Structures are given as C-alpha cells and as structure tokens.
Length: 65
Image (cartoon, rainbow, N blue to C red; front, side, top):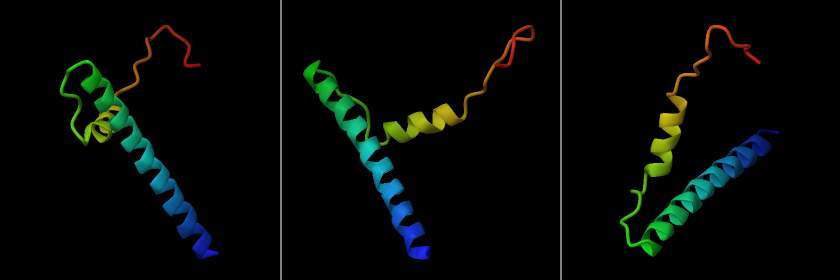
C-alpha cells in the first residue's frame, strides 16, 4: 500500500516539474523569437510564490459567492 503512495507522489512531482519546465521553455522560445532575453530559470516558481502570497479582496457590499 505504501508503494502506491510513493508511486503517486513521484508521478505528481514529476508532472509538476515537467509542467513548470515546459512553461519556462515556452516563454524562453517566445522571447527569443521576439529578440528578447526571456525569463530566468526559476521564474515559474517565483510566479507560484507570488500567486500564493496574494490576498483575496472582496468589497464590503458584495456577495461572497
């Protein structure tokens, strides 16, 4: 049973890493086509940290739904 957990954890981790790497490669290639430098290697991780640090603002008179 514990082996299934390790297998799933490794699969999710590998999928996340491949997704972040593919996003970085896409942004880097797009920048090269437009004769720009492009983002640094850790930019996808920086974007995730920035997204997690944002505060959700709900105006006082609005519905929370």
